[in-house]
Length: 422
Image (tube, rainbow, N blue to C red):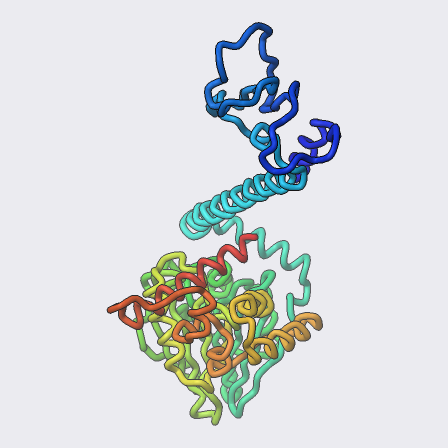
């Protein structure tokens, strides 16, 4: 816009009232392209591309690099138009240029993110970056990014441990025996401090996936607790893995029973862990890692929309009363994004107000329930006509319902990636 206004200013003030649309320019008017003065002398005829200009009106060709030097651009096309229309055309061109530039930047950011992911997940640089993350988070959040809120049932205690800038590890304790398991120990010092404060014995580490912000503390904790076993999928390169698990395999820690569920999509070997609450008179507890967040889901780094949809369906199948313990504190960001998709969703509006208050007080937003999530989480609402309409998507003739839902999920994920990138 500034460039357009500058170009108008350079042309100087109008010599009189604006001419109506299509009126010829007065004799002596010069049409400006970029620059260059026409050499003196008679003209053999109209300039190519000048469109047969009236006598006394001189066409000055553009010298814009890489363009046709005889193609009229900018003000040269606007001579004879009212000044308001000139300004509109120039402003529109500037806006279009800005939009194209923004789209280019977004695409470059997404491509850069993919390159960064490869470095993070597959090279030593990822571990060095993780160590830097840990150091900065310890300095910035000496007591954690959120105030932990323990959850108690008869015989079991779940203690969220805020680590890094937005991760959660979880210490799950069998209060009868004092045995405990930890899910995704990102920062070993924070986890060890919780173990010592609770006075428990660490028997197991359950790792949802290989990313350093979920597995970076495995080695240090194993070194300190030599009898501790590390569980996870053999399909992910999980540090210090001692006991590979397969889908639906169960593990006992004291009186606690965890079931591993294969949920690929974020990574090939992503797993979630479900604590059976039945023996304690409580609901099932889902430790979801980067599969599912409050109002969100993980990025599809190593899977397709169809794969992620199937994994999310596995989680939903656990039941509406299941407590969701996610791997990150993303609630406010995810709810805000969801509110841009569904403008008239009372459950979403209420949850967003609540989460805003929680985060203003630096309090955790977990757990939620899977029943709640299905009322406002767009990644669990791919079957809802209101979300499909908001995205402008319709099921094709003969298209399988799950194929259409995967297409809806892909579009929601695409928009969320762009939302995060801006």
